[in-house]
Structures are given as structure tokens and as C-alpha cells.
Length: 415
Image (cartoon, rainbow, N blue to C red):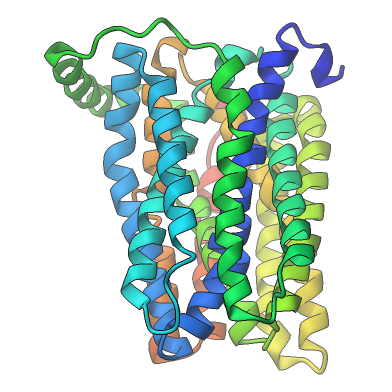
């Protein structure tokens, strides 16, 4: 059944457009273009640049891990979900645009603008994700989640194409202008989400809301162990999601520095990976509803580990760029399904009255230790090499895979 035949098709489409709106931030700024630009142009040298970029990702992870459960609980109590979503979006867009201004040597200005934008981006995702149970049923949640992820990767792809044709990618001043495109894109295409996705009637924020939010967080910490399915799933996701975050944060940097990709080649890599990611998200959204999110997550983790090892081994071969391209295609195909299925599985397992709060903890477990991957990657790069640092990703994915498979099939019978 098509997503557009669902009872709430306008609202589903409007909600999905938020992924379309925000994906260029991840694709262009975090993963491919700006990260490589920072390391190779703004920073004093590539090793220090890689280390500092990894620190920025780590700081983001720590702040989001602290804020997400608090703001999630506030949204539950006061009906402020859309307010926080809109605020996060505007902050991210504005600070993305500000990334145009830092030039060669302006390391800390660039890092400050990026960290603020990245924190706002992640917080917006917390509130956007929490709408999913309101828009779906058990039968179609995989399709809706997969559709949104796929549409997001289409957004990233179109933004990359537009950047390729509008700007001279070999000119540093032109690369800086791409940040303006990202910010304007986010503001423009998030408007339908704000207009058409319905929220509960908001109440006036008062001291009781804040107090009860902290009480709710404390209660959730105490009771989370009783939600055995959620607890064990989140522990496993904590590790494999950390591996994915490291891939997102360092993928373009690795291609640019270790494999000597030009900015144009990095952009083409981003275009191809987004095509693969969109195809993977759409396809596995339907497959998930047939075989279950747990099986799709397992498939994705196996392929991601193989692809990461190929990327590690690529510099040792006679055709390093070609092998890395193959690894990149495999990564692209599986990143979307892994994230989409994690989101829909969390939604299936969570009681409706706890959606915002538990999605805050979903973000918390996604960020609580996610500074470790980028941090270790940066440290190993600084003292050894980027190639050796890639083992951080492989180990994190492997630990997540082992822990996820220690769950009994009956615990996550999500079909």
C-alpha cells in the first residue's frame, strides 16, 4: 500500500519533508563537503584539523545527551513539541549560514558555529521523531519511517546537485557559499512540517511543568529497567549508532585526506552515496514490514562492517579509490535502513504516553557515548593515522551487533 493512500497522507508527507529539509545539513556540512573543507583549508594542518573536527562532534554529542531527555519530557508535559522543533530548526539554519564567514585560520569561529548548528539539528530530530507514532500504525510504521528517510536522502542528493551546478567546488570561497544554501534549504522545506503536522494544544509553561519534567526523567531512569525490550535494544544501539556517527563525521575527511579525493570527487561520492541511501531507505522500508525491523538491522550491521573493513583496506591495494567507491556504495545502501528501522522499532516498543520522553532517551543513548567514536578517531589520527582510526568504527559496529543479537527473538517480535 502506498504511503499516499494512508489516512493522514498530507500530514505524513509534511512530516517526511522535515527529513528532506534537514538532510543537506548532514550530507554537506557534517559528512562530505564542509568537514573536508575545514580539515584541508581552515585548519593549520590535516592531523590537527581531523582532531578538532572530532572534538566538535564529541561536544555536540555530550550536550545533546544532556538536553534531549529534559526537553523531551517538557514537550510531553506542556505540549511544546512543535515550539521546540521550530526553534531548533531556526537555530540550525542560522548558524549554518554563519559558517560562510570563517576563512583560512578561523578555526574556532568555524567550530563554534558548527557546534551550535549541530546541537540544534540533533535536538530537532528528537522532536520530529516523536511524531512518528501519531502518524502511523503497527502495519505501516516501517514504510512511513523508510519513506521519510528515503525522502531525506533525496533532499541531500538534490542539494548536492544544486551545489555542484551553482558553485565552483574547486574555489574555497565558493565552497563557503554552500553553507548559505544549506541554511535556506532547511528553512524553506521545513515550513510544511510546521504548518500541517498537528500537535496537542499547548499549555502555558509554568514551574510545575519544569518540576514534573525533572521528576519524570528521574522516574524514567528508575523504571527503564522494567521496559526490558527497550532497555536492551537501546544498549545495543548505543554502540552501533556510535559507529554510524563516526562514519558520518569522518567519512568525507577520510576520503579527502587518506585517499586524496579532491573536493569535486568528495561531492560526487556524496551524490552517489545519497542515491544509494535513498534507494536503500525506500526499499527496506517495505522489506521491514515483511520481515521485521530486527532482521533488517542485522543485515545492515553485517554489510556496514564489511564495507568499513573494505574502506580500511583500500589504501593497501593497487586501486584504492575504486575499492573505496564500492565500500561507499554499500555503506550508502545500509545507513538509511539501519537508522529508519531503529526509529520505527523504538516507536513500536514504546508506550504511547511515553513517546516524547522515551524518544528523548532514544536520542540520549544515541548520544550518551557517541563522543567516544569521533574522539577516539581523532586521537588515533593525531598520534598514528586515519587508516588505523577506522578500526574504531569496525569495533563499535561489532559490539552493537553482538549485543543486539543477544536479544531473544520474542523480545523484538515487531512484524
